[in-house]
Length: 114
Image (cartoon, rainbow, N blue to C red; front, side, top):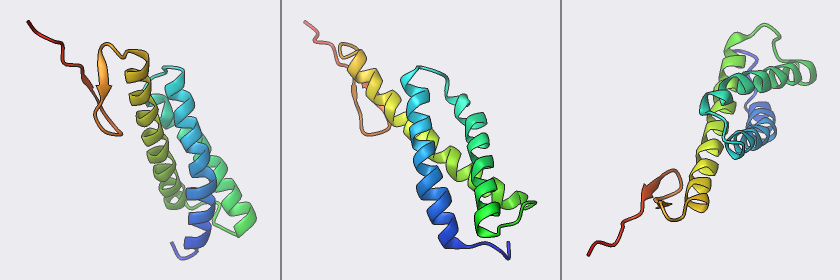
């Protein structure tokens, strides 16, 4: 990884494509699609990231480690966004069943017993 540039990685992968990955995770969760769909879409998004890195910033076209690092970051961001939106949807759409339990989880509502 001799041609790795931390500023290109932070700017292009984390900020630009990370924002796209966040929106992708939100869209997948908003339409109630399964979590695994973040992975193939994330790999495609990482392909675009790898292309721009190589074309604009003289990155290596054949570096599989750069692509896998970018894909891992992009997929992690999209999975985080997916979970946050899914949790919000669960307790807003089913308020009689669930209540929020932090940012990443929901819990069953306690029913009043006699």
